[in-house]
Length: 521
Image (cartoon, rainbow, N blue to C red):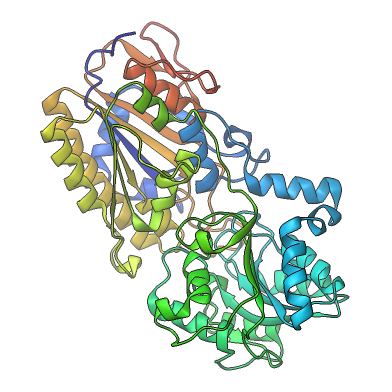
């Protein structure tokens, strides 16, 4: 099959957090000035894509999240998530299935004879995205039953849950482990202190001091501490780290177990705990009995951590198909969203393929004051590659709407979206000049809903919204049908004249111009 006329060069602009919602109220995308996006969406073939629930391999009706969305984009099919598999295992087989895991048994065998403790670090949340409080409670109970001292470091959510709902979740968790006589709460803190990828150095240092050295104002009643923080206007993700009254820090012969569900969770925090000397926090480090994670962590941190379960993987990906088809590709992203394209969309494949190059720009600190993030730098690289003319496809990720949307700051999110639109204008101008194709593709919903309809407070979680797919350029006689994120890879491969791998169950969205359109207004 030959390439379709005008497809090369093809620029795929991935728009994180760019969901479609008809209502303007609390909709940062609708409220932003986006003349370039509006023009392209009005004049070029367009479609809506399902980007949540079963369309991306998660439970029906479940809101989207980056890991599942990008895996679906990269695989051209919904991909079963490790988090879903763990939840199903515990539901179907109970705690015994986890208790029998060889890595967990080895950890207990190393710690117990030395009288050490196991420190569980995990998110107290029912979200099941970055963690789940049930997994944390099950592990605390199992290890306590083995006669091992268990210290739980509770990380509060506030992004995939309502901003100040953590007090109820923590109370539920403490009730769940009340019968585990060897388990106790060691500390409480928000996910912004080392669990998320954009943690600032000062916040990470504060978290390390509390977990490693029990250095910080102590709290005897953790739920009361959360309530005090709420009264000061702090949400769950920004709860300052605080040790409990009986906690004494991480000591020699102790072990760490991160109760994570994604390979990019708590990388900064685990790196600092495993090697505080390299992190600049200490001159010496205690000799730990072991360091484990529930789900395998990204390298290089993951190289020093034994995983109970592998992270989500798959083959026959979009990038692999491009390489095998002899097409050259440039992939552009920024540090705060790097895992999306470097890990999740690649099925965990860590090495560059033939004809592939990946560039990662630095996300600025304090993103609410810099809502444009690294979009200008990414756009400059896109323009340079277009002028060089040596790439068949350029993929650029604009994470602005998602990252700023997660802050709950409407003004900053609107500014972030407008910054992306200006970048799209520069890219579109070059595409129009050179006769190529520009594809705009939302990846998951977020910024189109910024206010909680029930409480009236900020809504920081992702959504179940569809996302846009716009095909702009020199293509003639084409229209699009609605579909899902799984259809994006087969569509792009068709545009580039390549056959989709048989493992891809998605279908090309391309249709003849005379065919009836199912595109919603």
